[in-house]
Length: 228
Image 1 (cartoon, helix red, strand yellow):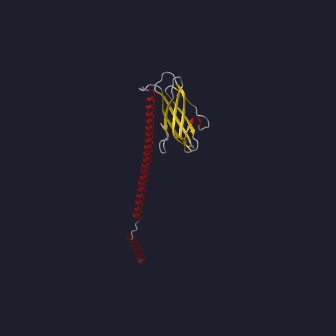
Image 2 (cartoon, rainbow, N blue to C red):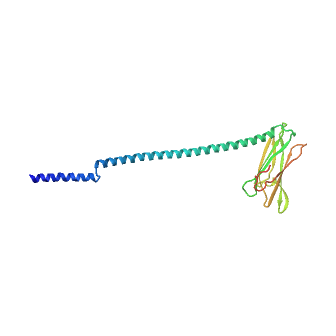
């Protein structure tokens, strides 16, 4: 009986010592579980906050991109409107010179002449605008002759553009209009020819008429490829 009591006492004491050692060593199952759960909860909160920040960053980036695209569209539209306004102002000024009152009398005028390269070798596109200061009912009719002065092989030379059509044909410039008319075409210059100026001769149809002449200098290198 005494032996049995001793065994029970020893066993109980051993378990108490073992449990005390676990506590002293910091091993507490309940505390460890609470700590694990707390850390998992913290991780979840941080992950949620991180996802929220990522969404906000993506939203800001999209908004910034949209703002840049909208600004670019507005700027492009403004540039287009400004160009259109400038073109309209130029056309308005032209029409005023054509149909408006003119103190210098009436008759045909060489409004402008432009010639510019086409990108092909020695080939140029020209545009001649004839206008009428005052209209007397009948259409203005006649022919135009374009003469180009320059040099070739060190000697002065004059070319009639009527025989220099880019398509190999002839340039026949005839006009008939009430207020104004544009005459356009392409010419190909011979090799080695260096142009200096273009003489425009306008010959109205009729008995008592005279030839209108106006000279346009050829643009220098680096200048706008138009004269007039």
